[in-house]
Image (cartoon, rainbow, N blue to C red; front, side):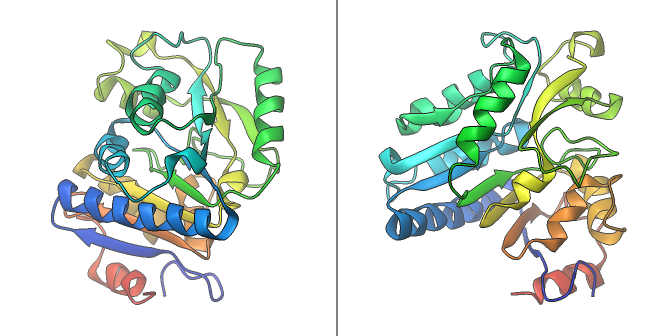
Length: 263
């Protein structure tokens, strides 16, 4: 069966369009947060950024059932050398689209303008002080997970890394409108490592739009490989991937049926 590693497999859910996808993903996310708060009196989460996550975060932040004051948020990745005032800054993105909307008070942002080694050390210490309940992530057009571009390091236990961004990743940022041209896109970033993401108790993956279809086929029908970083999600025990008709268009019926059978 595609995607199976022993008795573990990812669940893939396909919806008619992006709106239906994001609503369903937000509903699952709200339930996961409330469950964590009930079980542990708080929820520790990882939040992805980017154009593909905007509708999901909008739907999630409108949820009335979550006690946001009990939520602690960790930043997934950030460009090196980019000011927090730049439109492409993920710190700005999280403040605008998540933190200010929910009113959470405990959050950990990655300062791409600071001493990167010190930023990584402090963020990693905070991150590893207790388990992560839920990670919200996407998948890049090159199959990356966070900013772990291919060939990604799937073995390191370091919580955060300084990574080089490949051209496909940098072109995606231009295509999404964050930068005017390729020369403006930073070449390095701080990224949570793949293994650190995989330590989350639950992972919710939001991947809309046709431009992600090729990467999804590569990650879910090919080998689990550093060349397809997000393929590692297939080994997680509690991961759900939310797709729309466009993003799932290149996955075979057999693959979709196999992953759906996991439910």
